Image (tube, helix red, strand yellow):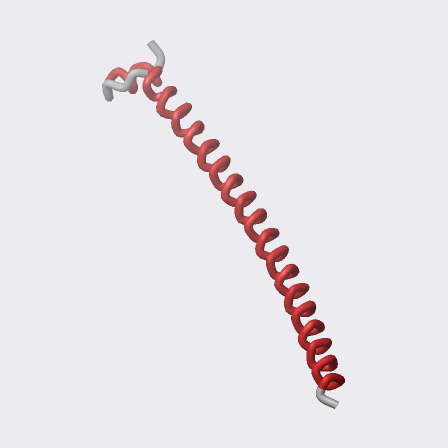
Length: 80
């Protein structure tokens, strides 16, 4: 029996249990990193959508301003 086995037996640890705990810990870390990557990707998608909405709003605002100017010019012509 080697020293590691003796220590584990003295502390009533099962080597397989310790290994399983470490594997579980590693799986948890991988899962956490995957979750963080997923959140990052979703954040990037949301930011891209927000940028697109801002661009559409700017276009609509410009079109509304142009339409209002055209209406004002036409009203001026009609009121002469």
